[in-house]
Amino acid sequence: MAAISWQERRVRYLLLTLFLLAAGLGLGGPGCAPLPGRTESLTQLKPPSDTDAGPVKVVFHLPVSQPAVFLTIDDGWYPDSTVLGLMQTYHLPLTAFLIEKAMQDHPAYWRQFVQAGGHIEDHTYDHPFLTRIAAQKQYQEIAWPLDYFSRYVPRPDELRPPYGDYNAAVGMAAQKAGIKYVVMWDAEISHDHLYTLHNRPLQPGDIVLLHWVPGLGREISDLLPILQREKLGVADLTQALAGGPLTVTYLPPPPGQSTATQVYKKSVK
Ligand SMILES: [Zn+2]
Image 1: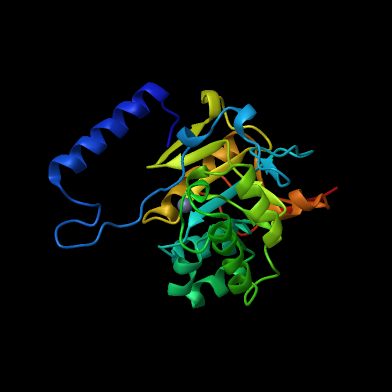
Image 2: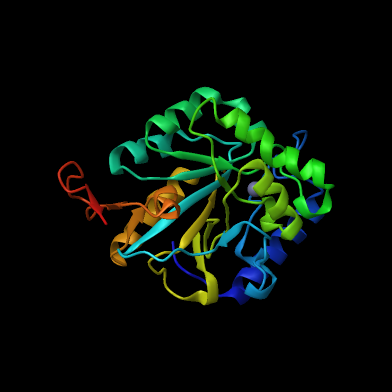
């Protein structure tokens, strides 16, 4: 995994789009319904002046006192047992922003995810563009999953708007539903590459965007040596937003060495 330029990335997206158009297929292939893909991206971020969510605080990056980043994974259509193994091995505090419909397909998996230390937060009921629907519908899309998720976890208060699409009206609906934070991102793992805002190296406090897509476990596995090289740990997003003591997981040991004794967690103020 390596960072590539925005220009190269645009060319790759263009080529992929042309391929799909030419093939006349979704990602699922002939006879299959198109598979849900990566629905959020760094390319959707707007300038800071346009990022008002009314009464709800919006974060793209969080100040941290320790060298650590946050790992967030969107949608939830493809639960991945490899991810559970990584969480159990490395004590990774992952945050899943789940679509309620996706979570309903595999509730047993998400129970295991929570047991492994994962957080479940709100990515709406059915993944609409929130700014394009009426206020009551906005409220339902945001609030319904909170009721459902509460069967599994303490009631979430973080929202990742589908496609990064929000405005002050969405913020009003979110606040009414009990949301305290709109959580965006400033780095991304996509198609086995790491992208960051302005193409800079990962920095402490970065919120990294991933998706529950086939290959997610490999993408996280490939990210770990990058974090190690940059001397960055993984911090717990929910803890950081709450402002309490922060648990940072540093990882992993160099390849070829035993993982059992070298992975550790460190609690810091
Ligand atoms: Zn999404």
